[in-house]
Image (cartoon, rainbow, N blue to C red; front, side, top):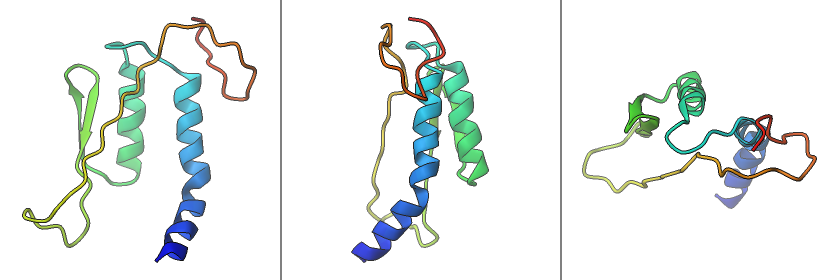
Length: 101
């Protein structure tokens, strides 16, 4: 099982890295994450995960189920905050923020 997880993780690494770099290049402050919300919704739609956007203004809620999911089964909840901090970035990497401050 560990080998399967490692293989699948390696296969997804570049895609997940691209998500992170996009988010870092395009930061938005709290309660202003409208483009971030659209980006997350677009990515979920591309992989066929149903979602609701606009939750509490800029939130996205999705439920990821496996084919055998039953309502009485255990599940895992994930939560992520995607807002930026109002700081000046001082690094010079390929995915440096495009937005000053």
